[in-house]
Length: 575
Image (cartoon, rainbow, N blue to C red; front, top):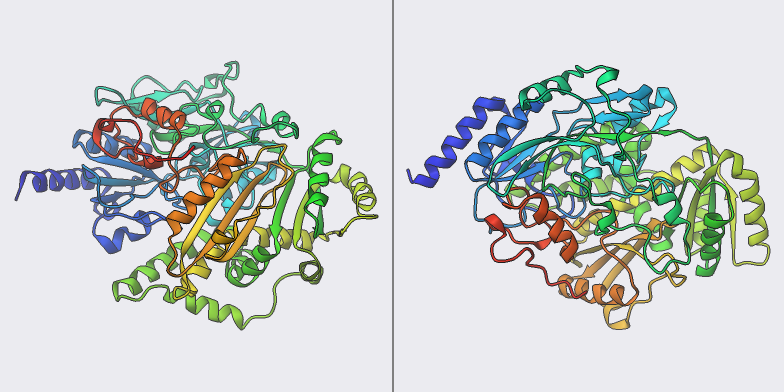
């Protein structure tokens, strides 16, 4: 046995001693659902380690760092840009994924006005815990539908659909960091007195063994974004309201993208507010622009949410997102992570036989046999209008909003209706089912589709020409375009289905050039992952957090080598 083989064997044995044999996975099949991203990202790993306590996570980190191996921290693995999975096989050290799914704790503090979330806590679970208190987390239905983790949102400055709350953000976290000398350190910035040693801190936190007197509420660290509500109102600003590479929202765990091993975050919660939903349709871009500018500037309260959907995205989502819609509609969001995990295991079995996309094609055939699932008035608006806007406002603003919309459309090319509770729920659920529809389309139509180019774009707040006009040369290479997003924040998800035989990377680079000319920033909220190159300020932030490049090397197309090699970024971003 070679020295390298002896070293990896010793590390595996040590990890099994820490978390137990059943929680150290190795080999292609057992590790598939952890090393393969939801949309993108894949690569070989030495092992997947699943600690059951915070102290086990700490000891596993110590062992991996001491063995000079790479650590990739992963929670729900629901990201759309491959940011918590390996990217290829060109790493200079063995890769170990630490999956935190077993570390699901959520602790309420300050009468539920704040929470402490452990690494595997999901938005869905947090939302359910807060419901009896009439409070909500930073994000609700959306990423929570597929089991997204709270920490994943913070570490990626995820934006969410709620206009008032801005990106997930906190300045209070407990995390491990490898310093410039290669030493692993535990840093407690939670604002909770838990002891002095890692063992004391982690064991007490796991048990919730602290009193109100141990919680510091007088420090100046924020537990949510304090600036966003004012920034989003500035509709004449020539910059985006929010985007991942904004240095103003990079703070330790916030925006760290796996360059730290985060054990817990402290976050604000928000009072739940009754709302009313309006469904708006128009064939004129200017109609929706005027609505956005008025509601962001003229009302005392910001809208709760405003989700945009183009007709083609509506259509593809209706057909290829139907199973996601029905699963959530019938069984709730709690069942979705298990369903995705089961599908991943079945996909892996078929792929081992050389058969790809079998489950997607079978599910799609089954969905075609079921009756339509969307409300009648939505389908009528689909036939009449190209642009759709789902607007949710505070109940106290519903009457004024209805009056404004009635006056606005008196002479306009559009219309609206106030949704029943059932229509409103299904409208928003359909919007979020669209996000995975392009993936299903790609799998079902492999013979006609080369791949997907998925862009996540923050437009300037003053950009009135938000409907994209592609050059004919690019448009001819696409089989479909899905436009949807968070309209009031001017954040759009743009999924391009590339025709067979065309070059997705060349198309993506051409898209970058067009977006740069418009003053857009990208990615807006899904973070760089392995799809986007990190711009210099973001790459510098990563290098500051992780000077030895032990955690998640290669993120943002930065260097994968230990110590960052010759430079801090391998990226070739044209901007």
